[in-house]
Length: 338
Image 1 (cartoon, rainbow, N blue to C red):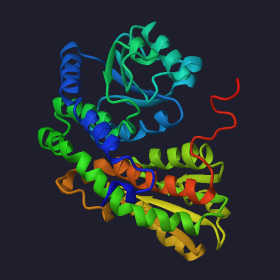
Image 2 (image 1 turned 180 degrees about the vertical axis):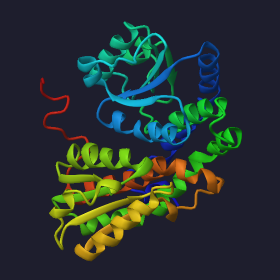
Image 3 (image 1 turned 90 degrees about the vertical axis):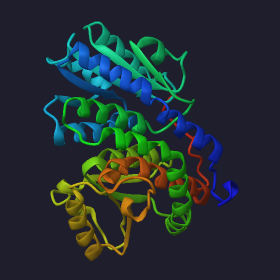
Image 4 (image 1 turned 180 degrees about the horizontal axis):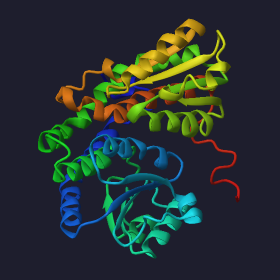
């Protein structure tokens, strides 16, 4: 498929950015080996807004199979509330597309004052965050999301601890991500266009996801539909769906279901069955619909956030088109003082 047939998709840049994330593998492995040699007690995944939500899959991954304490933390809350387990034997990871996120910068200072080893993923080597952390790991500018880097870091770390099987195979397969994700974008394009056309006038969406897709569900609801399109949303974890917010459902409610391939799939299946009994407007975005050539079956579930980010990136561009509302338009975020 020609690049110009995918709305607002710069394939060359997308490939370069994705490849640059994969290319960090040797540096990430070196960092993990060094940390393991030195020893550390716990790992903090610290972010703000979307970068906080995007950390959840990797806390989830560690919680499923590791005894290492791994915690996702909101940067601003950490500074105000503290954490009794954060100290000189802790490691903290930060991500920032611009390398300028104020809350993250303040959290880096907070961590370093307590002797924490800080690691930062960003696309700008001269950015404040890259300069502030102990270990900057830099990809191409504006590379998003950070799932590839975090997957490499976390699976390598768990592998070294004897808590993840097949790391070398998995990391080798990630080299195919530029091609894999371009094909995902191509396949998703007509689906995205159709969804946007059908929902050009919808002003409210109900989003559901679980497992390692709960973070993406939260992120897409808050950072895209609300922040970038000024649409009202409700976001609910599939395991918590039957405890409150379901009472908001009406026959014409747009329900967006994010379905992955981990062990929580059955929880989201249960939600899908129910919402289709109530609403006539249910859209399921399922990572299982995408081939992911070259990725072994046992690893597919790990890529769910990355796959859906690519799919929903297409949806976002088409919503921008049909609603004539730029994804870059803001009223308050980084516009006014707060």
